Length: 70
Image (tube, rainbow, N blue to C red):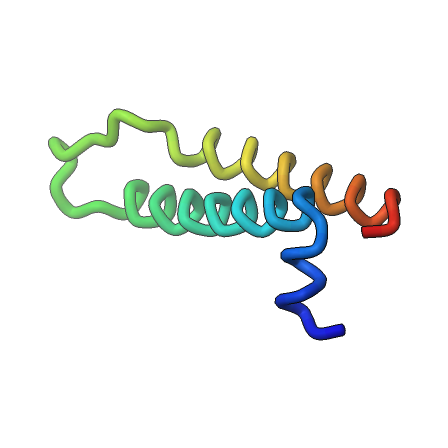
């Protein structure tokens, strides 16, 4: 079984992959936001919080998916 079939076989694996990508995107945005040159360009979204919550969701979804034998 290849990785694409394993991810698509269980909906929690798909959710974990999407949440992981969102967490990575949030981490990159938070890193770029904290090192911005123009201090007047603030973000309306707290990317650190978004990436932390998405990472927790990804880990829990992956753990439940593995536990159920997906």
